Length: 473
Ligand code: NAD
Image (cartoon, rainbow, N blue to C red):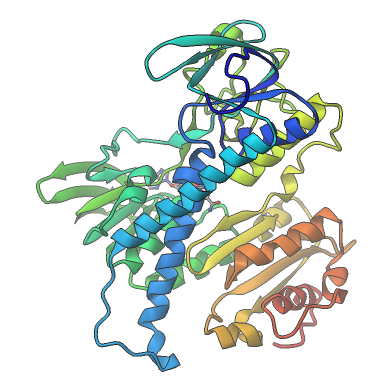
């Protein structure tokens, strides 16, 4: 146990899980004066920080650099021969994750949060049993218990992850070499981000997606632009593809799938990455015995707007509680939950204003409704699109493909949705999130003066486009 009093067995609040849901909530609760402990069996920081969001962003930075170097001649940079090696980039990604992990340990010390190392399970009212690596157990007591146990990769029966030839995202993250050929099943955020990384480091990438487009949660125009961009990089993409079997053999893995025309195709590749979603870690937590209700679909923990389960004193946040499986959503749920416990909550989580980000290149980010959803919901809308070619800074960057699309409600000029594909999309989306949070009109988004020349000017231009009067296009 790292933390304060090693022998302490009773707390106001005990977290099970130290990822972005649990650790952020622990710090906030400690700030509010609660006596807090966090049980974590792996490293503090959870999947996101150790084997998810952060190390993949380090690898994506490396991948971008590879592609920029390949294109460096136009900047007057030439080299005799370019060779790329995933190994050092992978090692760098581990260093970044480790640095952040140490940061969370330090924040726990600073805020006097006790870290209990081990695996926690509910063990009766107000009790948590913690099992350590050597099999010994200790019981802790707390008035409030918050479950933040996260999720893990889903394995399909006809595509069983073996960690060798058929990878989960965890395996892909630790690969030190890019396979010659790689098939990625699933074109959600995980599939698209790893496609970007491995293609940059030399793999011939083929993407198989069951639905009719890549990044299916995004606006249709974004999916179409994304598919075009990846195809331009030489990737093969099969949408509407139904995978039927995966047969590992001496030479790799042979995949059999029905393409969108219903024709059977086979594909033999060195490695397959299964990126078909994640499932919650809710099986071995003593939930059944404690009477904690799970959702009918997906086995997520059922919670109300204050993240309370049906059992008094037991709460759940983040991936294990369902909704979008995103770190920033988990952290916000954690904060709302502990502020409510401490009597300080301002309001529940604003689920309609959670940004979605995919960090491949081009980057994709969005918030609010897609055009299709806005129409389905009966809004009277105007849609504006501002292409990056109309933005001087994007042209100067040499990164002017894509666009920003804004959907506004004509009645009050509310920003119903904003969708960005292109340079620094994942940073720029924050302006729309704030705009929506402050209930700004599209006119106000433009009236706020944006510095010139910046990418952010395109936010204002997209707002103008939604009013039918962009300047630079
Ligand atoms: P996902 O659910 O976003 O995407 C999985 C994709 O796989 C879907 O498009 C689905 O249609 C497809 N699919 C499912 N079964 C298939 C099959 N048999 N054949 C072909 N395609 C199939 O899941 P993910 O990309 O694995 O990510 C998991 C979770 O983690 C998501 O909720 C995601 O939002 C989150 N995540 C987010 C980020 C980010 O924000 N950048 C990064 C990684 C993960």
